[in-house]
View 1: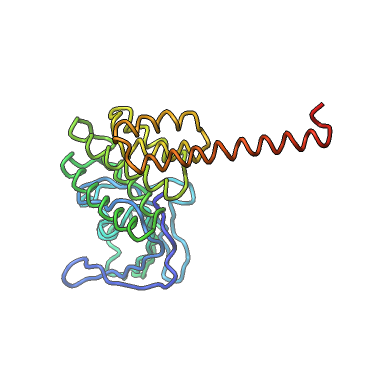
View 2: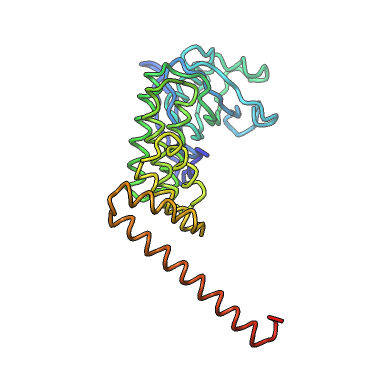
Length: 283
């Protein structure tokens, strides 16, 4: 879900290991999820190869990801790479033979004094942060989602809003309600932009279960019901929206939409009936 587009043009950048050593990193695919922090446990896929492309070892062969805690990994290059990545991102590292320390724990088949290549993909953030850290990170991702939404990148925004929820999902407390409420509302809105009406409806209903007077979500649910042609249910929510909003023009416009659909549906039935009568299929 958090995988972005593959990068068309490779660009190598240096990421600092210490003052005298560097590793070259090239992003292969953008990530759309959260960015991990120090001391979080993450899950990755990797393929370690010789400089000429000969594979040494890969977690992808058996589909068994490698988990480790950032800052405590025996392989310093893993720490170095993952802390710069977003969930879903895939990157390639060029590792000088002088920096291969620790990689021997991955395979006993690594030749000595050899330059290496490491293809790494950040799959998940496994270990929860404190609630305060999780809220802070979720809000940072929410800002990125808002930027994507404003730029018309609705799929990206949907992925990021989902990431906000996943960052907080292992925490509890009434203080989190306002954040989930915001992210669910944003998801309902962005899925309406994508015309994924069942998803838009689902997220609106999550909020309405606890806040039955939320006019924004009533409107989102109403729109979804109209688009899904559940007109009887739509009329019920239209009535509720008109009452709560004191006949707001936005809700009044939905009344017109329902009336047009009902009129169109009636017209289609009449035309079908006339056609059946002409051909004798009605008997």
